[in-house]
Amino acid sequence: MSVQNRPLSPHLQVYRPQMTSVLSIVHRLTGVALTAGSLLFVYWLVAAATGAEAYETARDLIGSWFGRLLLFGWTVALFYHLCNGIRHLFWDAGLGYELSTAQRSGLVVLAGTVVLTLVAWIAGYAAMGAL
Amino acid sequence: MSLRSPLGRAKGLGSAHEGTGHWWIQRLTSIALVPLTLWFVASVVAMAGADYFAIQEWLSSPVVAGILILFLVAGFYHGALGMQVVIEDYVHHEGAKIAGLMIVNGLSLVLGLAGVLAILSVLFKA
Image 1 (cartoon, helix red, strand yellow):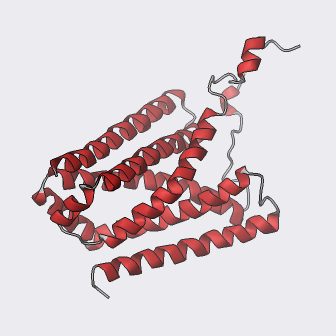
Image 2 (cartoon, helix red, strand yellow; image 1 turned 60 degrees about the vertical axis):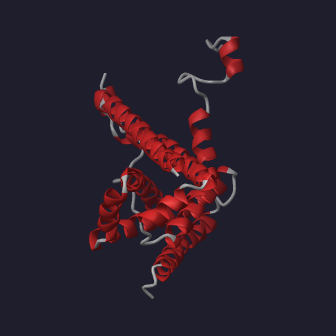
Image 3 (cartoon, helix red, strand yellow; image 1 turned 180 degrees about the vertical axis):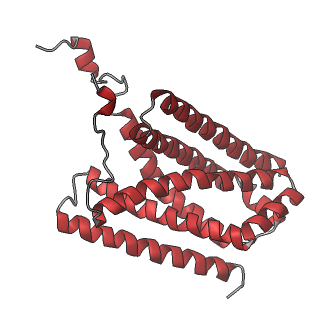
């Protein structure tokens, strides 16, 4: 019995990519990225609890260009997962399954991600007095 | 004819013995994380580049520490549940799957606990 060779869902390769399917897999990818990124957050918290020197090291690391790049990616992933997660909650309530609605809510998610990310970063630089 | 016992049918937990528990907790934590995430991002943005003493002062408020702990617990719980689904979907080798689930759940516990203890130690130091 070739149980091992049965095709198992979900299929990623056999369908033409569409906005609905791409946004769906990006939701998973951003979820995994956020889980990995939580390491940085816990490191920052532990550094803040350890002492001034450890905290300065963490702050310099996160404030470096590479740290900011990671943080920027993390912010994009966070806002995308947040917006698309709310879209999923509407689906869970049985709303928005019409194909045209799903297409439109997908665009709203993408726009929301861009706007929220920009607002957060502009506000962040303003708080640092860099603007 | 169903082979399921009347008790099993009444409990409605199915063969995995948890019914819709996983799905439901994933949704509950996601709803909790909407306001918690917005609060967290707004706080971090307002504190961008803050020095050690500003952070200590921020974390020494029981309200801030409490909300931050809720964010951590809901976040790691939600993350572990999500990673479990991803692993179950894509890792088809039984041994690797179980190992992956153990690593994800173990790391989530350790990291979540480390974060919570870090917050509490700053709170009680003040």
